[in-house]
Length: 307
Image (cartoon, rainbow, N blue to C red; front, side, top):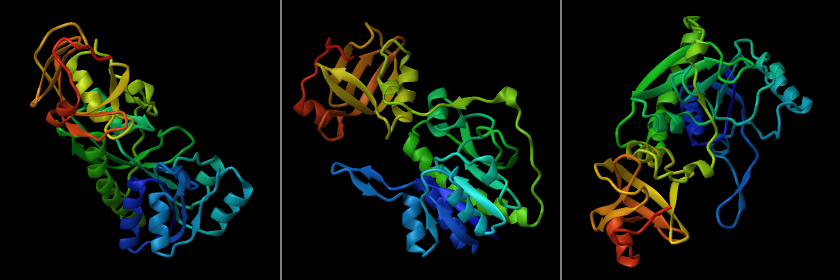
């Protein structure tokens, strides 16, 4: 099918690669403008831009799709459908109405659960047993359009936001290729979402990743996994930030935030209910280290307070 693809991060780039491999005619790729990144804050192209350039695809990076010139470029592409995956820009009604078969979104949750910007992280924070991909017909609402195809994926007890992303990206790629094949055959059956079951996956903030030791250990352990790799769960040690990269909930009791044990197997901290066993952490300006390596260079004794 002749299509426009709109996306920005690695999740979207995986889908674009699959569409190219499936032989679709990609008339135009849209991605966000290059952003400063790294210690030198040099402009860095998106993962989608890298794929588009590698395959010689027409590329546009508008600041907004409300711009008449940007809309005219989309119109002249004369496509049947537009595929959107983690693009990051709002599609105005004029753009949604352009393709004859509409705009399809690859969403990383089982809608209507976790509409919004951070479905992977919110599913982990909530302790969901499973998640998946929904291919959705886009409308003017926030992830409110009709569902066209779903792929389910169980969430493993060890999954982080990164590992879950890495499982969902190829699943999303597989789903959009299948959906377009069914669309070409007029075999997709749109299913309206039940708004009463909807939950909202708010955008992540750095502030929310600060550990509240009064919470149950099981919830803090979920947060450590959900905020890995971004924005990274953190607490404070002697006035300095301390990132937590791997942890699990265990039995234990004490004043929340108090270190109960610290040895080469890990650091145990009392929580509002139970205790958190920290096995990987990082000081400001340092490297991610296993607890044994960390304790070799940083003294933490039982009775110390975090937070």
